[in-house]
Image (cartoon, rainbow, N blue to C red; front, top):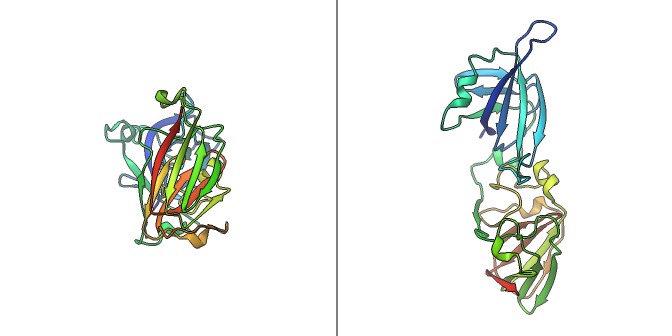
Length: 247
């Protein structure tokens, strides 16, 4: 069974507690799962019991951009800081794992994992007001939406974009938003590289784990496309896709 992991981003100390125990805070980001109090961290060659979990974030406090994986978290351990601080100063940023108390999601318990290919390298949907509108045109599904002009400046004067899914067999819009994804409510939470992107997912996509019914179309495409949007997620089975802009 694979273990969850996160990157050790920083280490700092707090005053000893009332019982005189040392207190050290470890900042972990790029989480594949969210640790809980009582889980045991494996940091380098040490096993450290988590005394408290706090300060979880899903967006960068300076830029407001979404964070990789399932965000970042602060964990408190009752160990001296001096021996742990050098681990956070490594240039390659140490990744740590932990042994959870509770059962892990399905993708930690199998080697048959789907793969994710990000498709929106130089564009994206609007981060706040997507205005998603779906239109069927024969065997083609048209997904109209507003682009993101903040990160991709070339879209500042583009009012709308359309993602065209050719030879579409079926599609659905689920209720998985950003909070649901980071809270582990999506079957790909912690498995997909990041929320808010457009992926093609290859392999077993575990469609039965999402109860939202599909809308059938006349096509026969079987590739799985998955777009995480502001307030929902668009899943499409189609043969291919293309992007059109409206000036």
